[in-house]
Image 1 (cartoon, rainbow, N blue to C red):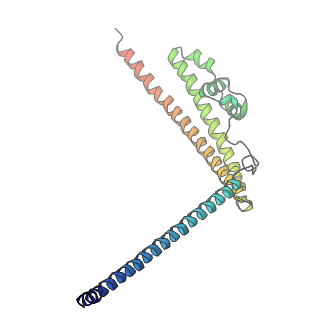
Image 2 (image 1 turned 120 degrees about the horizontal axis):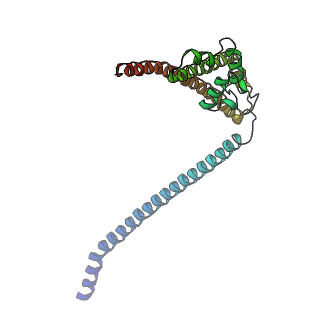
Image 3 (image 1 turned 135 degrees about the horizontal axis):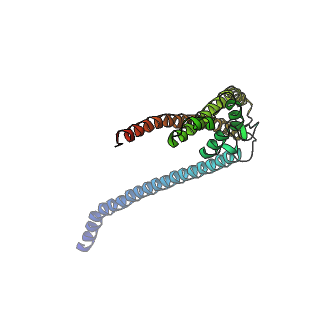
Length: 236
């Protein structure tokens, strides 16, 4: 009898403990399932993000290929109605050649032709000058001054005559802006107009160089006078 009662007591006292243990396991299982579900959701979201990034990369690559196709090839604007308004001719490639043409009073190319026209107005007669002035330095200075003046006059005269033509040329290119049919043509035309502007800037720099040279020759006269005075004062 005592054994039966002991067994009943053990069953009665152990049943709630067993029930609580099962409930804890069940609740832990639920939490674990929720965590696993959350991880799966996060993984799904990450996959969606990666797919979105991959799709964007493909779109960008497609756009870049389209842009590349749009800016390759030949549109013809680089050589469209090209006209060289800046060149003086191959004979004026450097200052030594310019001085040689000025010494002769004429030459090949646009600048040489302009020198021929202007030198006829005020011909530089070095022989006559040397007959009257026997000082070697003064003779050389007269030759340098006359050549520089003729070169500067011819260059400024030539450039001035071209200015109106260059204005009309730039206006003609400007009128073509609305006629471009695609991105390549628009970019090429813009580059062409920029190149023409750069050439005009170089033309201005050339004129500045001529003015500087002429100013330097004028200053040389002052140096020649100073040297002559010094030699006079040092004579015994």
